[in-house]
Length: 495
Ligand code: NAD
Image (cartoon, rainbow, N blue to C red; front, side, top):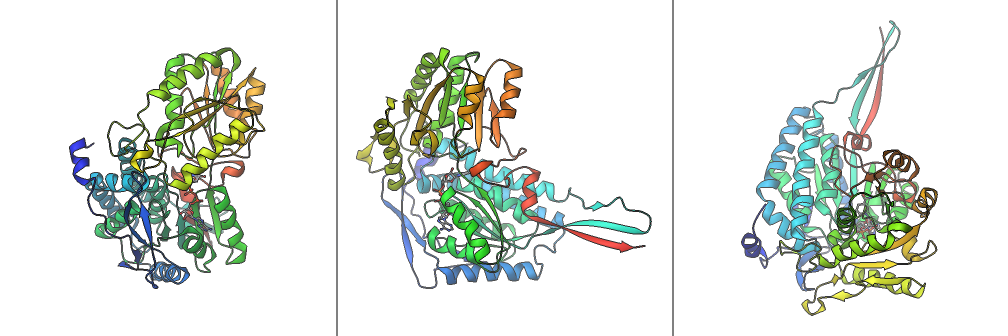
């Protein structure tokens, strides 16, 4: 970890324009178009980004295809690919301070979190998949003596990876590391409001020895370059993390183009369920507050619905609100900040709109509810707790992706399960209870990709993350992530 004086030396460092990485070379968009990148810290222009169009995307896809076809990467021994990836992880760690500050200036996440969840996690993820790749074997089928059935694992080909703005390095490497480790070529499309640290780690990948063309990056607007990637006739699989609305477009693009596979990691409206037999209320409230308000609620698995049993509701909401009120919100480059900026003015406006709607529908703001630190020019919002939220309120059903907690009470376990599952999402959940049997019943009953028990957040790279219902399909993290990046091929040999 670094100290404040080191961070401050880079706080105002000039940021070079973000360019496209195609076939190992950095270049502008063909038509020279750029977009301004405003920092959420104070709303000023940080730099520009190349605004790729369909022609640029096809250049990137062609480079990825050529690299895959001549097997310059896939044809290397797994141990050789591992060496390059391990070197990449080392370079990321060696440049951790620069990467963390650059990423925070771009997307607004508090730096204490970014150092760990972004840079630290990126290096760890790359190392984990690098270490795995020469330990996975093919299979021999249990045939009779007359035949030999071999099951090979082969890379899929050209992967299009589209990622969001909340944790670009963490989520980006959840896709890049297994895709590259398995021998694929990739065209990466970062979010237009969080491209800079990803561009920098791709530069480090080249330095680590990744051959030209294996990893390409197209920046710019999602509706243009992202859409072009989804419609490409030469992308074999799309892996996506982002909103449900974009996910739907990507699914629609598949049959309109080449039937590419589409894997979606989408949003959530995750219930954090507190029973009256919760052990330490103060500790549970503190962890629950962090579970919604870290990164100002811009976390896909955020525990954004507090379902609390009536008997402990007042005490628990008071303890959670007290913990939330103490959180330091503000300058994301200050190491003591616990919740940084909202990523953009548009996102801030959307979040505030949710609070207004909840009040109109009869809910009550118990804490926060307003924009703060407006004088900085940045996009900050107070941690917000809204009580009396009913299942038909928009705040109960729709993802806010901001620092807003919706509180609903329940009577018993059956009602808790009913409320927990009463949205279209199924990404994450939390259960707080000292009753082991109840904990296991809830794990089975709640529809979610991950259920935290007596904690919220923190699962590491060894376990999968993916949603059910409208939170998506497929999984990032763990060895299961390889399923998206390898094909099984059978060889049937007569003996
Ligand atoms: P978004 O869908 O607006 O954008 C995500 C990416 O898609 C960006 O790179 C964007 O440029 C691109 N894009 C936008 N329009 C496109 C189009 N028409 N075609 C192709 N690409 C397009 O999402 P966001 O606002 O950046 O991210 C927030 C969302 O991501 C939230 O819903 C959040 O819950 C979700 N998320 C999910 C997970 C998970 O693991 N399930 C993790 C983090 C974030």
